[in-house]
Length: 123
Image (cartoon, rainbow, N blue to C red):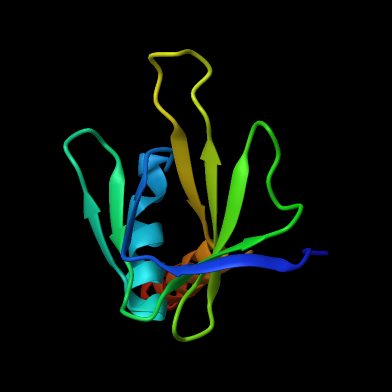
């Protein structure tokens, strides 16, 4: 269970540098169709997510540790995503940032596509 809300600030964009590129199309589809976000694949293979106006980044007591900072991204449509930031392991390293979608978000889309493919193959 989450602790008490510590802070809530507007957020406009996030750069995810941990996304498995094989999942990009599903990730992009969910965020653009279900959440009203815009996703852009960058040359460095990171993904920039632009959130709709009114999106908040919320921090809860006890959600972060020494090795991971975790905040909740709350979209205007009340969908909640998790932002995880892992600090660099070496001085000259970069932080790793991941945007975690709600459980089952990618599975639901894959299931729909599978059903549609099966129906078309029967025709």
